[in-house]
Image 1 (cartoon, protein in one colour):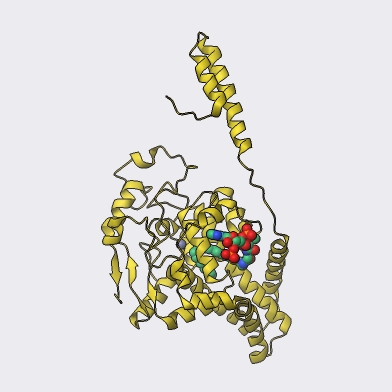
Image 2: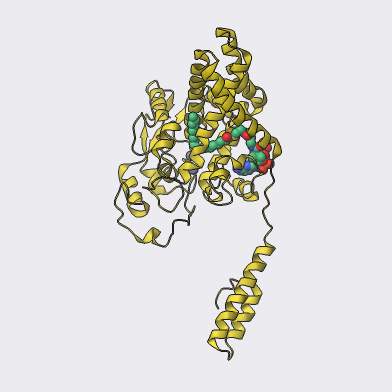
Length: 384
Ligand code: ST9
Ligand code: ZN
Ligand code: ZN
């Protein structure tokens, strides 16, 4: 018996259609019944409604207006060192996100000894993008359920939503339901993550706002208002550069490794997000500590940072992907922009708007990881 795709009305219709009725009439009826049944199915599904969080809307409007004013005062009135300080501060904060929250904690693409974990935790706190535990949970969920309702910043909902809009509304219930299936036990065992979460309410305002504003006033007599707006500018700029990975790098660019998912490889995002713009590669091989196949330190500063700490032994078990695995995958599912496609069947049935998250994994330690990928991993600077 054919599966009942459209509910009981469709079954009734199928039975009726076997009787003596003209084919033309039957086709028209079929369409009408299907429409009705589809409508019923949609009606019975609880509708997802946007719940705007006005506190966040007000905060982000203030930050963006303040950032423009901050750039103006930094260029026109503030002391030169205030701008230099703000930009250098962003660089440290960025590494806390890319090398810490992202490549170390979310993807487990390498391991770090406790002094490096503390440094990365402080840098990540300077960035105020939520505490590590929350950041990682959302990010693992994003990788596991990319382009679905369970993806916190689902790029299928448009540029604005994936960029910043997702922080202005309550999460889709699927994020919370499916997010609960993601293993977070590794973070629950890491004392650096546990203590940052406990003390976040004190650490975050201190490291992200108070210290960077106080320091220019104390050391080179900057006016408090200029120092404050330089902080607002620095914070808002680094948020937007980070968000580009979720928005632009899920919309524009090439897909050399998997043509069926939205993440793209983008040089401009790679440069502005400290090496996190090779996003098509990164979604296919999230356990690679370089978060890119090709590229060099100029387009991937975070890799240089991790390699430096690997040299002094504080970073170890750096995982990367064997070249033959990359080629095999790219030739099966890529867009042909770097490696020639040998298999055209996998994605032929996908049009540009269809995406799949099947088989996606969040990183090293995801139990869905292919055994071949685990066995063939290349580990640099082996530790324990
Ligand atoms: C920010 C984050 O900007 C940016 C992340 C970007 C990621 C990019 C990655 C790309 C790579 C890195 C590139 C770096 C480049 C750097 C370059 C820099 C130059 N799973 O969240 P709540 C449950 S943050 C499972 O309140 P609502 C859980 O039980 C900006 N469960 O949901 C939770 O309770 P608890 C600053 C989940 O109420 C409960 O639900 N921060 C999950 O819907 C409630 O959670 C802000 O602005 C999950 N995934 O509120 C804060 N999620 O936590 C903004 C939730 O106690 N956020 N649960 O366990 C908020 O105000 C709220 O989260 C909300 C949603 C309104 C957005
Ligand atoms: Zn990632
Ligand atoms: Zn992504």
